[in-house]
Amino acid sequence: LDTTLGGGTPVIDPKTPLLLAGLGISETDLLLLFDLVKADLPFTANGHCTLDRGKLSLLCRQVLVGRMLGLGVPDLIAALGLVQGAAAAPVGTLDQVEAMQAFGSWLGPAAFTVGQLQLIVSGVESPTVKFATTPQTVAALVQRVQAAAPPAGPAPDPVATLKTELCGAFTVGAGRLADVLTWTGQDAVITTAPIHDALAATFTDGLPDNPALIQPLTDLDRRLERDVLLFAQLQLPDAEVDSLTANAAQLGIADRSALKLADVQAIAAYTGYV
Image (spheres, rainbow, N blue to C red):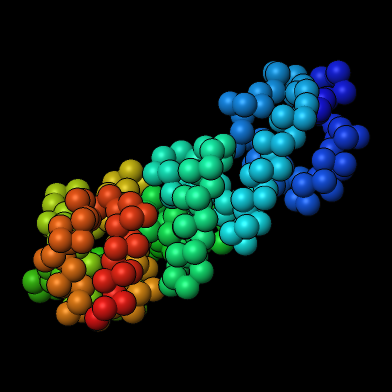
């Protein structure tokens, strides 16, 4: 496959439509596949690559695994990363196929999509699931907290005001927010100096004068958003979140702030018994 036809200007190779038709995928999907298998199917700096039978078979096998699971190429790559617990690598052994098949069997009746799992476990956005928390929303959040302070008289505790605003942002009650903060130790983080500094940030025309100052609050909000999504999808009441937090080790969860796919599966299994 020669993506430049020997020249320096990238063009659509005449063989590309044949390859796309054979695999039954889009050009965008093909580029994702090429990135997935780049160790086995390298391109030159000029975009040249020779596709022999073995390399075509490698591409076909990845697409077939995705179809077996009912997943498109983007979700397949995300699922590979979740199952493998590392950067996604192409399926090349029977054990890997069986691991993916087991994941597919679990995913079918599960309360999550692949995109949601990727956000919860890795904090990585997908084409279908993205963070609602952005630098813009956090800047607006800080300004609302600041606006809550009266022009005269004692100022309210900014962290208490922040918690009230977070309840509204995530559409949760104070009890659920407390549970989510405790789940990954963010109840300690929210009172630290970097969060206080973020809440004291200055703005010009609605934009932070020092965007780096509000980054710790952005990180905190995104951590909370991932955990809110986890418990919301499982429809866990506050009392069960409390129980999970106290007994996570009994489910084999070593680090609540760095969940693995197996941890989410253990929590989902626990949910089935309550």
